[in-house]
Image (cartoon, rainbow over all chains, first blue to last red; front, side):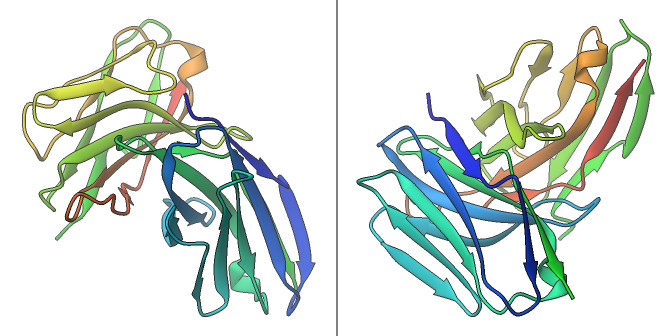
Amino acid sequence: GENVEQHPSTLSVQEGDSAVIKCTYSDSASNYFPWYKQELGKRPQLIIDIRSNVGEKKDQRIAVTLNKTAKHFSLHITETQPEDSAVYFCAASPAGTYKYIFGTGTRLKVLA
Amino acid sequence: NAGVTQTPKFQVLKTGQSMTLQCAQDMNHEYMSWYRQDPGMGLRLIHYSVGAGITDQGEVPNGYNVSRSTTEDFPLRLLSAAPSQTSVYFCASSTPTSGRKEIQYFGPGTRLLVL
């Protein structure tokens, strides 16, 4: 079955710097890759997603890139702000299923 | 719309006790899932359902049962609770649009402590 690895597990950046979180997946048939943000004590919420027919997607300060050949996808946050501090999860969903396999999460701390 | 709701918010059980975690959604979503969240292990899929009467196992199904008698409800049952089931449980729902996957909406979670 699908397996998703996520790195790093923790990341500290200065306010205004960029942050990059990387994930790899094992099932080449996966075709949907969402990213979720979870604030302390809250539920995960989708921040951006990408489908396998697209290489990059951007939404304001957040972007996601996908390399299908290497089975890598990454989350990029530019001009980080203290409110970006949270745990971020990547996920992959194999084609033909509605299963979502999550990475282990990255705790991002934005230092003011 | 209330979205995805879960009850209870917090529960303490003794080893061997049984209980049901409730999940309901009012968005007419076909797909519903249960996850458990443990420190350092992300969200792990327990069971999922693609519609009323249809369920399947996820990554960590042992010790849990589910059923889906209606589109709205997807309860998770612990038949004999064990300390290893101490976790935060999230229910989620989604629906496809034109055959494409759509985002999952998560419930607020249930924090379970098994002593």
